[in-house]
Length: 254
Image (cartoon, rainbow, N blue to C red; front, side):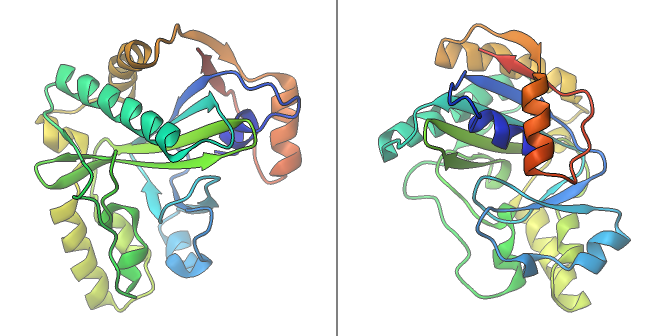
């Protein structure tokens, strides 16, 4: 996500449309850009061997553990709500098509069905507990999350799709009693779903990526060219995030 921040807000001010897909090692809980640090308990995350990171985009706490994360960066700073909605909608409908090709029937959350938990409990701080127009559900269970940020010359959209595992696992690190954590985990399992359960089979990150690329290309008129992050971008990541360890990172220019 440090790379997304740099690509979305480049030093030279020249924004190239970019799509990135990535998994996490080690696993991590990401907090929304404006979310308070107390959404999760650091000691409990450490016990799970989960890092804590802060997204450049908004939203609520989300566990990146056996998920596929993506970012879409498009020119268009100071965007209007309609422009933001076009990106949300475009990515959502591309995902719907990709899911259909993988045998998963999902639905788009339309206007009027979105909601945020409005109580003051720890559970209200979790991404999978909310419903935002543009995100996707299978039945009534959330399967894909999304959040955006507007830079001066671009729009960044982040998303996460749980591929497998326990969608209630993040409840183990919220600031609550053990009983409340169990209750929250059970609620999350009823309100969210991993892709393998929805598909009735295991789907690898590579399989999902190969399904999403042509769908995104058709929706936005992209032509994908795979490329590596440039040295100037890697150096800027290190400058902005000194703790970031640079591995081999790639991006798909469009």
